[in-house]
Length: 243
Image (cartoon, rainbow, N blue to C red; front, side, top):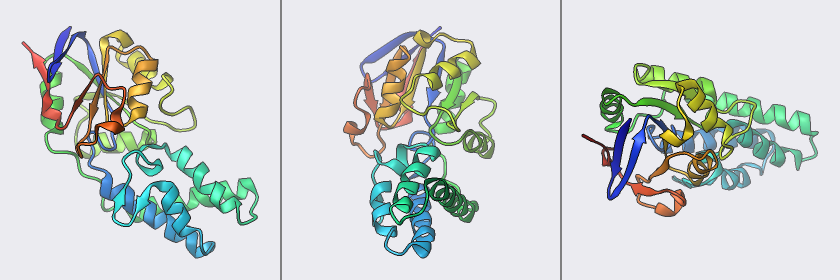
């Protein structure tokens, strides 16, 4: 059992900490914006006029992306459904619309394979220190499980992140099943685990699972994006182990 302190908030008897990926450990803003823009261009080429409304639905405006928008916090499945809805408005059938949406997003991802999102500064050092303190660590992301695993492998985090949970065909955040699944993998009770994330859905998921606490991180300083957090931090090194 470990005691974690963030600012003036203390969490006692903690056995595990789970981290979100996009916007928490991974500096994904540029990547996600590029992904949405590429997908919108691919679809607009097939259905002229859809591109701009799609970008709005994704939460992308010029060179900015809404940290609380679909592309930033939605699962791949949710993004496919939203994309397909715009395609269906052109008169295409629903199954065909879903297929086109999936193929277009796949093509956009493939195009960006050579430019993956970087890890935030201090992420590795934090994971190392938490692991050395005896904490079990995991990742719970709205991204596909394969993307979570690829991120962990790319930045050589497998020695620290034992639970790698993504959203495939099942429920996404804020459904507590994801948190409960991660706890089961690590063999800990939710009441002994913390969630660190950058979105309201992370906070709600942890609360729904009756976690020990929720730490909201906002690298951009907008705490309204992590409403429901017990404490809000701006840097990962604000998560400290008390001796």
